[in-house]
Length: 378
Ligand SMILES: *Cc1c(COP(=O)(O)O)cnc(C)c1O
Image (cartoon, rainbow, N blue to C red):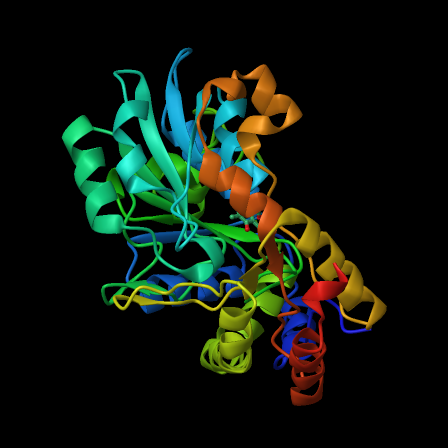
């Protein structure tokens, strides 16, 4: 079976975990945590990077930082991950669901205006599959209305929009190091802070609502309860694993680019012939190569195609269900939102196996099986 994802050892993860134990420091913000944060800050040129237990928790921190009041609204793409909306809902905001563009599958910046009113506090976006949203337009709209932009950059680490790294545009951005992401430590995340006024409070929120970070830096002589917060710090065992992967990021990204390009090159003609669409990357975007997907002609063809691949030992998977139509989304008035592109894409998208250590043999097996698929059987 060729899995959809297979976590891989990429470098000296085991060695560095042993080193973390030898340091006798395996709680959070130890030597490895500090190294990873410094590396992220340097590579991306962000003001502050704080490692967290997950991307979901980084999103929760972002939501707490917004000081949301009852009735406040946060715009999220309906074609999105549950916690992209949930984290803000948990802090009292009403999620407002936006549709996506039919080409990049990113939040549709041309559909934002009617969703904005005086209760709108933030626009949260996802750079889907690692391809940048239309940041110039989105930032301009946000600035005009005094709204905060938050990038859920779980897919977009090391991707670029007009030469600038994704995750460096919004006041805040979040990363995921979950097993399914390009760079991983199993479960983990980070909050990237581009707007410096958020830094001090973010450190407090991340440390159980206390000023423990300032205490450890010797800036205060005792630490105490200051604000809202929770336990969001990543263990140094995981940070050691993550550091091993981070230092191999060029290797990881180049492997992923090759996989993406193999799929694209070998499926291009097949796609045109069979009314299938391949991913779109605008000329001014550099993909983070998080995923490769196909847009099949219909829901029925997709269902049949996934079954066919499974019978041929290949695990391909669909992706997000429209959030505005989910059980929770409907309770939040989801039916009032018009997101036809989200509904259509959700029915037709299929993601192909895509992982760092995918072999040439596996890659060829997938493209050959796809080329042998007979649309007429459906
Ligand atoms: C994976 C993912 C998350 C959640 O990441 P965790 O680290 O598992 O919390 C959030 N948003 C998007 C877009 C994701 O792909």
